[in-house]
Amino acid sequence: MSTQRLRNEDYHDYSSTDVSPEESPSEGLSNPSSPGSYQRFGESNSTTWFQTLIHLLKGNIGTGLLGLPLAVKNAGILMGPLSLLVIGIVAVHCMGILVKCAHHFCHRLNKSFVDYGDTVMYGLESSPCSCLRNHAHWGRHIVDFFLIVTQLGFCCVYFVFLADNFKQVIEAANGTTNNCHSNETVIANPTMDSRLYMLSFLPFLVLLVFVRNLRALSIFSLLANISMLVSLVMIFQFIVQVLPLENKMKDPQKFPLILYVGMVIVTALYISLGCLGYLQFGSSIKGSVTLNLPNCWLYQSVKLLYSIGIFFTYALQFYVPAEIIIPFFVSRVPEHCELVVDLFVRTVLVCLTCILAILVPRLDLVISLVGSVSSSALALIIPPLLEITTYYSEGMSPLTIAKDALISILGFVGFVVGTYQALNELIQPSNAPILVNSTRAFV
Image 1 (cartoon, rainbow, N blue to C red):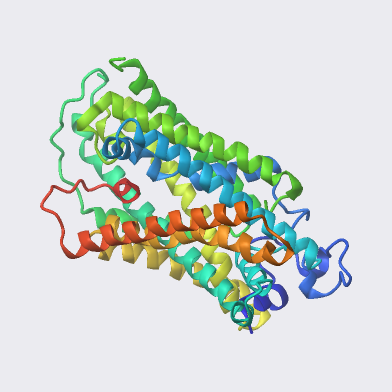
Image 2: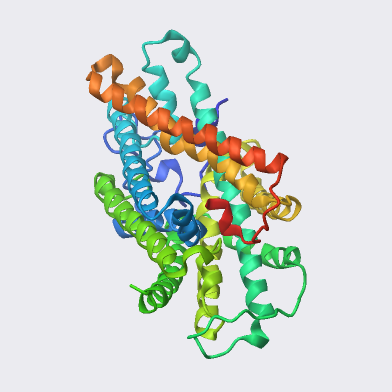
């Protein structure tokens, strides 16, 4: 029995909604009372356009944003912003392709909802190649694997980020002043090991992921966005003043517009913070721009606020692998045990990310490897190939095929280069000093 069948027929999907299939029949389906016709879009517990925008922003603004000034330093003040803009445009276009293909199969197959894995599977079934059609179910498995690895990898980084930032603030507390116009190095008073900080966050994150409804998570996502927004405003304020110069929505039709608005905001944030941070700090820029801020209470609060945002973001990143993994286990137990098994699996997964964060000595490189493999595949390689398999038999212009092939090649090059760099550094680490901070994983 496939994961799709388990999710649609045997499992009440606690993590996305609190109603059973019988309580929310699909509109326009031939057999609305059947379990397989579970209404995902447009139900009473679905997310609004504002909640969806909040989730979109939160899912794309994380610890990597703070490492962009160093990325601009490495790429150059011209190529850095230009590359960010190009990749941002390509990534948004690929997201649009994925949404378009998903809507295509919803209408074609008379379904109310298809996720990423379903879309790839149906795309392969539409392929003119018989080999791809016969193994279409592997498309879902591959996508699910990449999603699990990517999202749980981000969760590991969040453990490190939280531990490092809280440890740095606490150890420098005695030397922190009210003077924000100097950035003198402070001798830290050693406290407990950062791995103990990770363990201290573990029970709180376990409790956080017990929130299984995406609509309820939007509250935490909003808190995270507010915390990060305040932090970013304070970071921008310091940099500028001293410069020497769709599927949970009630109205899924609105998702393309929200996608473009949200990603324009994200891309503008990435480019502006990357450029301004590098122009301000120059060659002395560190892996996270927060490490360059003055050691005063105002900017120490920036680290704490951003850490609060990352804490709440953990639940949103965790939601995707939970949606994939938990139904597999819950569908195999009696109904009265489903909730217990659900919570148990969530606890095990959070503990797993904590253990990996503690045990892996160079987590930054491991996450870089995971990002090169999984993120490149999910964001750049699969969507354009999916468009070709979906629409080729219906007729596609040679220009569109060439465009999709070019994007996939770009993603594959990033996959090869990024993977080689990460593996090479893991096998033969450089002698350069390593800045211990989690944001370096995204640089």
